[in-house]
Length: 358
Ligand SMILES: Cc1cc2nc3c(=O)[nH]c(=O)nc-3n(C[C@H](O)[C@H](O)[C@H](O)COP(=O)(O)O)c2cc1C
Image (cartoon, rainbow, N blue to C red; front, side, top):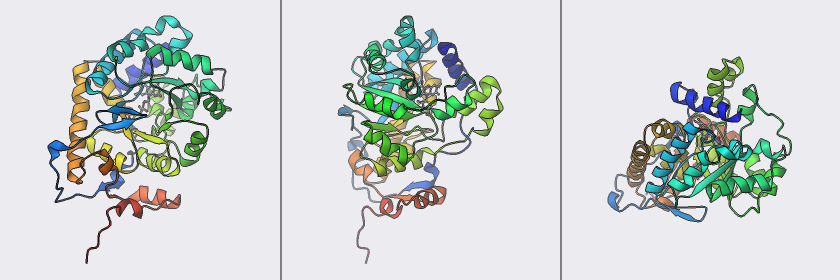
């Protein structure tokens, strides 16, 4: 039963420590402090363009749930916050709602609670290689009046879970077939990151954006470890490409909009991700933990992160998101080693505002 399994994921994520032990890479990224910002913090404009839509801040609620009664309330609370703050929101995999129409209301509540928000539908890429196509994608989009469709790539999770589906042959062709469906397609990992080779393939297949879903936040291997006490989950707990590294790999190799998701927990990390090339950052588990309480708590958590982002933006002397994206960022340590061994020059990130100093 898909819905029982998805409920397990929620309950385990709420109760257990399912964070990866490896950090998300932003610890190796430093924004250069400006002692003379020459702007008024209160005048900073954090609004951004997200697949053509103006949003109030470059932060979104990453897709998590749907398919059972408990999920309905969670999606409702997340959506109320998305509507209030004018930020995008994704729902979880809609397979349960497609295969059993009686469950569609657990997803469509998002549109009811957020009539004006940018909503992102969600389907698994592995389903596309097993017969899902335009018809099912349309159903998912129509179910929530979606403004975009995320296709999740989760080979790690499928390989770890006992009932996983590991035949990923033909996924890219399946994604390609959806490219003219009428809403932007976002290819989305779920915690193991996307490398530049896949980013380039996805761009050629016609996707409009990539959500890197990198390592350093929620680990689905951890969730599966607790679910089945299976040894496999433990070994692969920290498998993947850290979020910060994946963000650079995808942003440097394509012209796509890149969303940095995976362990984003504060506004400084959002600022760093934007300076590395992301268009927005996604947040999942911390918002789930608040959504089981109230929409107020979800909104308060997001507001905290947005306020922190504003302070970080001020401290790098940027008046808006475009200027923040062009600020100097120094990459050190393991991330520098990784990027350089992959042929990506870190110096250019650190010297964008090159001035003559003598
Ligand atoms: C309980 C739970 C369920 C999730 N279900 C989905 C899903 O159905 N589809 C999907 O694309 N991502 C799913 N995700 C992944 C998130 O969108 C996100 O990529 C991941 O949790 C990393 O973000 P975080 O570290 O902020 O939690 C889920 C995450 C959680 C915590």
